[in-house]
Image 1 (cartoon, protein in one colour):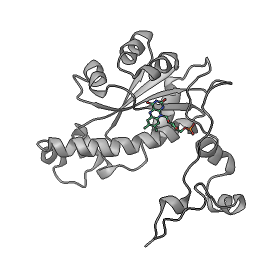
Image 2 (cartoon, helix red, strand yellow):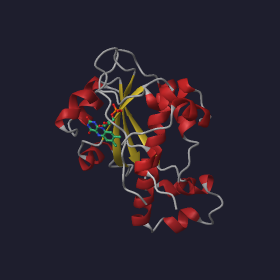
Image 3 (cartoon, rainbow, N blue to C red):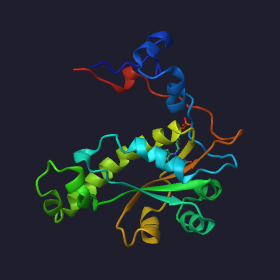
Length: 216
Ligand SMILES: Cc1cc2nc3c(=O)[nH]c(=O)nc-3n(C[C@H](O)[C@H](O)[C@H](O)COP(=O)(O)O)c2cc1C
C-alpha cells in the first residue's frame, strides 16, 4: 500500500464521474457536492409533513439487525429551544435558538422492544436482548450514528440545510429531555432553508479516494 498522496482531493474527471453514478448531476449536487453545513437559516418554517417525508425515506436505509435505534426529538417551541440551548457549547447556542427546527438525534437502547416486528427472523430477540444492557447501548450508538448520516442526506433531499453539532453536554441534554425514555443524545441538528447570505463557511478540502482507500 502506498501512502504517497500527491493530490489530496484528486477526483475522477467530470464525465467519467457522472457516467459512474446512477443519480443525475442535479441530485448529486443537491445531496453532496453543493450541499454545505448550514449555520444561518431563512425565515421559512420546516413543517412536520416535511420531516415525515424525510423519515419515510431514511427509514429504509440499513441498520444492524434492522434495529432502527435512532430517535428524533423535534425541538420547535421557544421554551424547548431555551432548555436545549442551555446545554449547547457557547458557539452553538445562538444557532439552536435561531434555527426553524432543531432535532436532537438520539439512540434508544430499548430498541429491542421492536425487534419482534423489525427482526422476526431473530428468535426471542426482545427477551434475549433485555439483560444485555451494555451490548444494546453499543448497538444503539453504532446504528444510531449511521442513521444520522442517512438523516442528514434525507433532509438535504427535501431541499433543507442541516447544521449537525456534537458541541453540547450530552448528559445534560439526556437529563433535560430523556429521563423517562432512556434515549441517549448523539448529535444535535439544526434544520431549515439556508439563508440567502452567510449560510455557510467556505468549503474546505476533502480527501480523495486514493488517500482514504486501500485495495487488497
Ligand atoms: C458529527 C458532526 C459534529 C459537528 N459539530 C459541530 C459543532 O459542534 N459546531 C459547529 O460549529 N460545527 C459542527 N459541525 C460542522 C462541521 O464542522 C462541518 O460539517 C464541516 O466542516 C463541513 O462543512 P461544509 O459542509 O460546509 O463543507 C459538525 C459536523 C458533524 C458532521
